[in-house]
Image 1: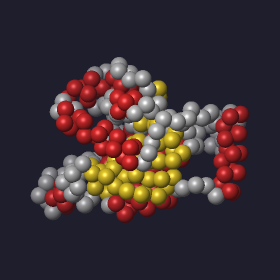
Image 2: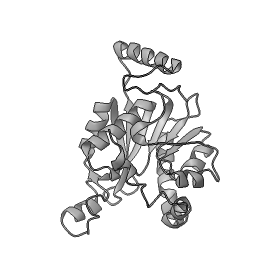
Image 3: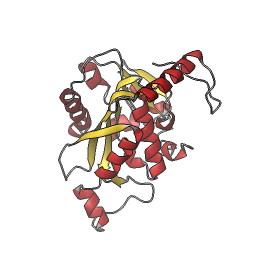
Image 4: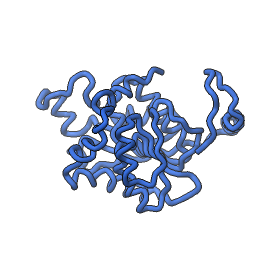
Length: 248
């Protein structure tokens, strides 16, 4: 898939040299707003018993590394991925995470590389179902156990007011709200089951988090995954002509 729809969120606005500093200093200048996502994700991690293990956590997109201190506080090794080099530059300032430049539509990692995959503040920028399918499919593919993804809740007060014309829309490429049932269906098709939704303020906060457990593979899938892993380790070409990559 052409990942320009995903890249468009970073074009211009997030690619200039000061983008990372501007995002860190202006977007999250309110301490309460800045702490909201990390605190909610930390509660989700604690609720699902996420502890330090052999596999790291993936934060994609990681932006300026806002979640990094929370992962470090919990003793979790983290890999951060973002499309924007300036954002990664800002993230590098105070983070011990491994940082990788790349797109969520083509995650440069092998299947099951991460115990938990966190995707914060991306899905509401994807308007086409094919975009959501691709992004969610990649998040589930590289997760071993759990995916935590934020989205704009179509049942929130903000989304309702927008539908009623009481709140100004953001244009054709603005943030898109999604029904929980639709999101659960997308995760199910990708191989994971949504086991819960979390909100800072239910029905008031537009942003919510979905938590999905990756389904165990059936024996046939496991054999195919083993063959794919061996091909990746050997660096043999895939069907699309690209070379395999070793797990993180």
